[in-house]
Image (tube, one colour):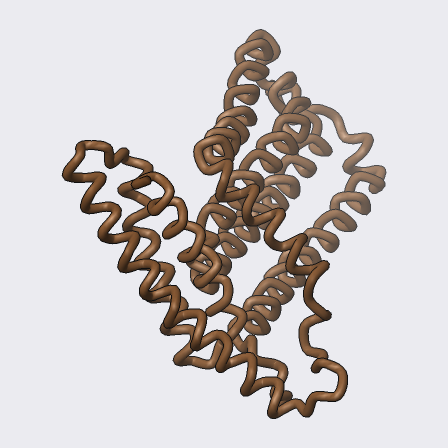
Length: 268
């Protein structure tokens, strides 16, 4: 095992995501080819309407295949959300946003995919159809906007923190120049142990700050939520460090430090 490959959970996350994408893209590509081939067959393309429904067989075939494609996209979004939440609990909001984005994408695709079918079945209801799908498309987008607005500092810290980390640190998996793999891995683990130990004291101070805010009647619902999350993040950092998962430990430690700093500032 590569001593610098100290992210087993990260590698597992990447592998799960890759398998999920492959299991989604390949069937969708196959269904798209099937849809194209069936649409090109003369017996389907030139067939007349079915009974009194005024629906061409080609419309029914496309709608049926499109439904399976929409299901696969939704399944992929749900799977990606669950994988991310399980592997990185401190990024649960990102997992929820992935699911909501998948729902919005499916709603947009379904609107155009079922439009011809709806026009054939109930042409008088097209206006209601447009309004219903508008609401279906906008609802997950609105929830995403609310989530980002409510936790704007969380997402901005996430984005800029990752950018700064990418600029300041060498690529993952490469040892520093002149350092042996074993010594560099041990030094990284020792630094993380020292950081988590220091962070434990900071979280304790944050807990005292929360008690003061509660006594003074200044503990808002948002700060109360932060007081719960800071302990969860610290516990996640400690457990990840015990499992020698330095990447996960760093992620939990970053957010525990962020929430603790936020509580301490509020108590000043």
